[in-house]
Length: 204
Image (cartoon, rainbow, N blue to C red; front, side, top):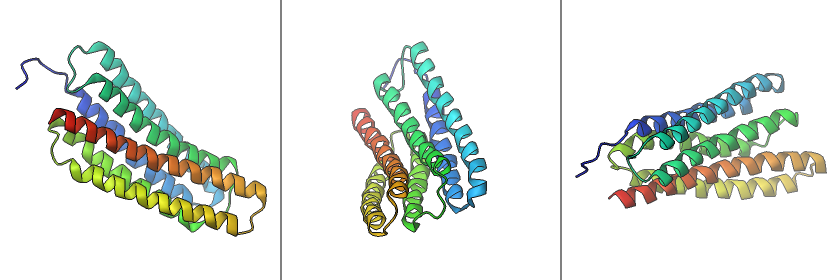
């Protein structure tokens, strides 16, 4: 039993951050399907969501500095908030590179990567509210780890395809940067899941 009152607002703030990841991943998927002329508008929307995510993260940090007793370890809250922000940053950077580099046709396997990110975002958004009770979280981190393994395989196949397609060196470098950012996003989602697993074990 806990006898000290705790500020439970953190659960709502973390859930809000995670929900923004769903919006961001869906916008990234929309950008891939759009014509090049429409991509800048979608990328701007994603950039706006990224700013919202930054503000949500800053709100959590400010509240941490103002709260004496937190629902679980304050360092874990800090790392979790930062981890969620990293997921958004990598997705936004990938979208930004696609627009800045004026890439036209993108390899189909890039869509496979983004689908993994969409599912990872959905699972993360579903998991954050369950931190209140620390219940029913194991399936979340197991599935995220499976998805990250899937993303790794897709990443390796995509790199092999890029090098086999006879692309000019400049286009190859541009596409590889995008692919790397998407892989970074998948890794970031797994990092968040690993943090949740650690927190759950500490609190059990």
